[in-house]
Length: 399
Image (cartoon, rainbow, N blue to C red; front, side, top):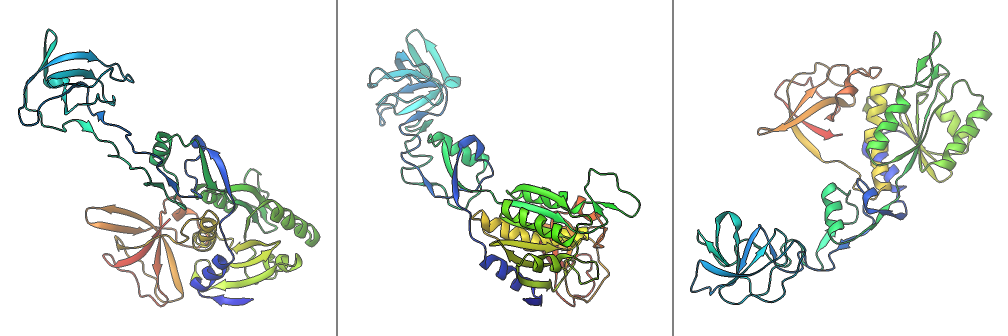
């Protein structure tokens, strides 16, 4: 086991042991937010034939001898197909999206069309090709519709629906269990007795997992369990989950349980201690061929540990690029602390016409929850960093 490793070393160890989960097939309407397990291609042009862009009249004219009066041969209801091609000087009433009759050179919008008996008069100039959606204008046969490893958006669902793809291959969602350690911690729904605290970390980690595409199998606390009971508890979670995240008990105090518990179940410890703050009391192990990530019991440290260690694993299990993009942002306020290990501050980032800016949130103590209610970014400050000044540029990770 390695001790007190750099963040990138810890991440590399975890990701080297993480591979995408098997694929499964889900109905199209259940695929939103899931990750495509295969490339999906267009099997025909879209649209497959010329279509009207507007309600109006499809017309056939000599390109070199434009006219403005056409004989109406038929009116096509939405979804109907023309009974015959158009000849020079003829027109057919069409609706938006209608398949155009052969011979159509343009479509006259109804706003500039005047009817005189069986004729339609165009009141403005119309050029060849106007208001026609050409075959393959959207997608050509063989075009990539959705790439493997992309999270399916509402737009993707619409495109797949247009091609009749009703069963979508996706990576299985990771099953994640949370276990909060500590004799003074009780479940969030329990009224704590004097000396006890409600578990906020378990629900926090569960919410982050759900947001990032995982499934939550368990959110539990150990209470004052005996060593044998604790062993059975963790072994049971490993049977149910692809990833187990523990919180609390990760330091080296007399009452800290995490390392003892992992050794007691025969887990292979990977690393313990990471050179960051908050979140230095973090570690990882392999048990029952599953990754176990141990995070600090302090809320801000727990959240930072999730984003930097558990989040990348969760993404790899879904076939997604593990690391979010690192951006440069202008700090809107200052932060007085200096020096120390590499630090990740909770921030609120926005992007406007001037670029990215980030506000360092109040409540940066590891034990506090305040900053987590508004945080959408981590501000990455290197070891030994001087105080942050207002207007200074800093790298951020959007979370």
